[in-house]
Image (cartoon, rainbow, N blue to C red; front, side):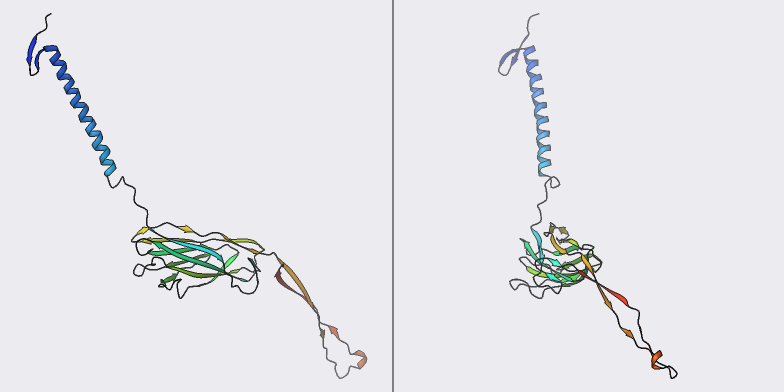
Length: 249
């Protein structure tokens, strides 16, 4: 069958070649349309606010913990405490922020069962002479907790200060190593910053030993009128042992 020639803008072309040309153009347009949809979809996912990861907060609180060099009786340097003695921990806090404050900080410290909460000594001045934030003690039982700053008076940037946490070694503790660790978290305008944990501070409590003592005294007796000196006698009062506890040196 002979080819039929038709007039074309670029010259004469056969009818079958013209049909093939039209099919090629149609496929090309379809391919371009699919490619545009994919490109726009990818751009939409990339530019969508939901797809973008939020920038981390630029503020954080830090805390370091150590055995305070000032201690009461029952302490032997560097970290030995007798049962019943007080233990003073020094906490050093700092606020690092690029937006003027750290908001409100919260310190948390769950005491070991061998320790009993005694008190917290808050500072009256900060390092460098900056303002002292407001402290609110929320301690309950074994959980030592207090906040630093308020929404109206936030913890200022660059602020550094020290707090002393005082605990007591329980008298019935049988001895061993007692660890302690605390953490500080911050929140500003409803957005929580990172939580930083202090190093673990260990104290050593020697095993207590029993100390026995014995008291013995004479019991004075009275002599009636009819009794003679020959019948006068004294008898010792029953004795009792006295027991006390002390930690082994």
